[in-house]
Image (cartoon, rainbow, N blue to C red; front, top):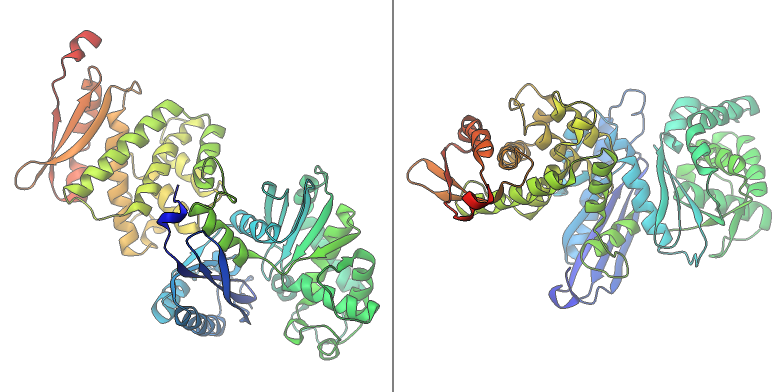
Length: 529
């Protein structure tokens, strides 16, 4: 774990690319991990406008978002930020043309955007909101209504017991039910929206009813704006930090908003005029969830995903108040592996050997990958065999599917994709141009997949008998065009050597070098055989 004496003072920017808005948080982090907020900015860009029916980000929306990103990046860099942590949510993860958007964002704003799953988004929001609420020993329900999705969580001050994401959002519902509606929203139409929300959320509501909820906390621009409208309308004042939104006032506020044509809705005291067209769609989500869960009131938080990014960043960099025990990513991988009843001894031995190969391969110049790729290799090695839980035949394909669809917490979409592809390619033929998922990756990422999967192939064969016959292995230079793989056996390892022999062709295709296999002579082999 990093200690405060090893962390230099630096400035980090966190950017949340939502379906409706882009948000920026710039923070100065001191050696003791104390934080000073330098900038907090938000700009409405409507990235998801018109997207969800065809799963395509619209050109104008992309242009608006990239322009805002350039401005925010300039602000961050002017403040001295040496790192920008940026994530994309529902609009980006559901768009078929997201790679084009990511490339444009990188080229024009210098921002590498990570796409997170809905469950990971819920975790980050929970981290951010819970950090600003004093729960004591209570358990809270958290809800955040975005433009394209709604994230829910149940948790205490320090741990989430439940995380979920619904494909329900203010922009998504407006596009589906209210596009082109300029007049009042009729009771029948509003009830149709509520029915859709209830049906879409039915399973989540069943899950949530199983928890004891002591209080509810709402975040997001939609919920803040609904609270502003209701408190101005029914308490005749501006919202205060300790105010709550009651369900009774929410219902009264919704009736008032629905009774007005769009143009008049923009002038309602407390409303953000830019949000007037989508607020009824967002209100319907909150209406149904509060009604179905019996929530009489909702505390309002101005924190959210970008604050969660900061808390997650501190956790990864050694903040003892944020994380204890096993790192979240490692815990998430281990939970998936154990759920699939993996052979833990074999998986850990394979992972240890894979890391030995990675390190020695870097020393002899077989690759120039870094610590990020090394960590992904370790996780992939632990998960490489989980598909055999379903069937041994082509188990690498099942492992790939399970990794892609497990909602691993702490990972972004690219990291999950890379781990899944490493596992898919560790056995059988290399998936080159035949795999559209692989072809869609940047060239550097494709190369990393082949390098890491080749190393995993060797590591898996080094424990082919699943008996720990090889205690260690390392690459050594061995003349022009050749690399030696030297094994330190714990006992007879002919089964492992035979497996390695079968990987010579793949090794040469990936690294352009011929592979030699050497077994160190160890006297204890004969006695231990």
